[in-house]
Length: 176
Length: 176
DNA sequence: CATATCATGTAAGAGGTTACATGATTAC
DNA sequence: GTAATCATGTAACCTCTTACATGATATG
Image (cartoon, rainbow over all chains, first blue to last red; front, side):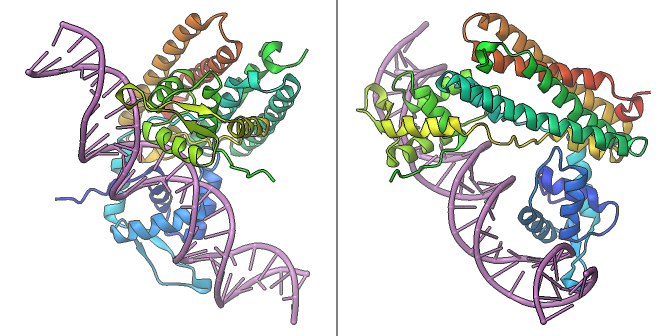
């Protein structure tokens, strides 16, 4: 009888990173920000909480405290099994929540001039993100095909968004 | 001194819908599912809670209970002001959380055959969503430019996603 | 009269964010 | 020695989901 600890995607990702060796909470935050931060948000608080919970559940073990109270967590066999089960289950349905489209839906309640500003600001943020992604893609080239694929998704998304922006009719954008 | 009640996007959307006249919680759920359901999830529980909270804050007023205990909520001037302030602030940053890209990031831990299956399943779900969007777009044509624009975003997103799927290299998809 | 649908809500818990509190070590 | 950064964690609160509980009305 295996005690099935159901993983949430955040916890599962931590286990995923621990496959490359023990890490402290602090390090895991940095790793996660770097490797999945562009498509999965997570906070320090969350990481420490999930680590504590997974330690209780036997999915990870806390090692000795090192300098500066550093406390490395290592994957257990149970943790490895739980991670594999999570991965094998496939990605859950995406929760699509796009604040921009809410603002747009209620666009008729926003004066045209302000609407134009708001949209332009948002478009700009997207454009900056696309630029950042493209730079990242250069750095990443040839290293990790999976990471490259994930980044390519982001690029495709932002490109599509910008094209959408530029195709909006003037009665929506509020520009004359 | 105006008591600034800070709205979350869900609450704000309810106020937005109440601009077209009083509605009950039940009706608001249906309206929201229909009008913003494709880019903003929300549950019954949430709607009743937000209505109660906004009623306490004076942003809406509960009317007399009708048949089947139906209780219509109406917008107050404070509610209208709060909504306008929310709308004017512009859309907040999108929280990007794409479970698919997590699965992909850890793709090397998933056997190639299973990886191919998982990706194919997910691609299929996306394709179905795109089809649904396209049908909706036909129905919507010429009615509401803002709703059409929001839908066009969804279509652009799904089209970009499908194109990305189809451009994935075989070492990522796990197909030979 | 039985079943489906309409309609309200509460309870419990998971997940997520922000702010607070504390202290060690490194770099200047 | 002082400021930055590393490192751990707790507390409070908000948001969101799922399950539970209850009853009225319409449809067949």
